[in-house]
Length: 113
Length: 112
Image (tube, rainbow over all chains, first blue to last red; front, side, top):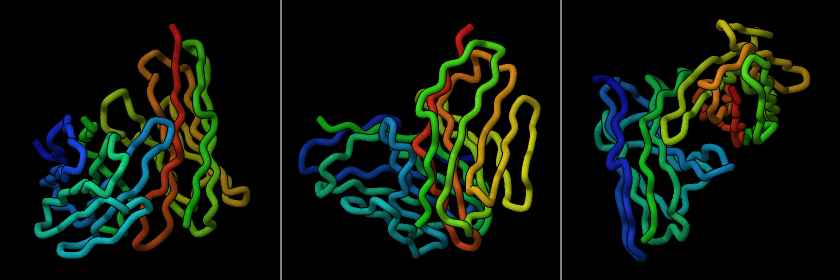
């Protein structure tokens, strides 16, 4: 089954804890993105990567970190510095940065205990 | 950077009516405008898109119009059905190595 896989579907974070959200794609896409979705706020860009070993901050990068060591993987770490992490996190990809069509994973709901 | 405003935030219609959702954008260099549909707890799915060299595009009951001069674009859904109920997002993207900027979404409720 080709596509973008996010795991876990649900994740709980304790105060002061770092958690990592997984995003894997088998579409051979170059560009990958992380969006945060809050009710009534739309989708806001956290980080993106246009090529392996390179990534850029989006609009709301504070309290988050990413890595892009492999083309197919773009994990997002929510650090303890992110004081309001409860949200639905969506990973997305497209086959090259200049291409337009963005494909989304099924999302991870992160909640704070 | 780009800013996308979307209205209304909620829209309730009766089955069979038409629904219109409107978006405005700020960056005149933006040239790609997609619309996504997101059902509750699901991923956003691309339903239609339009490029700046086209004024209108249709796909069955869905159409999108673009006014570059006024910097606004709209989604039109005709003969709405209960399964059209979802949150709809508009977005805009400039040329080159750009990212999509999304509107805040419109929750569409179609009542039988």
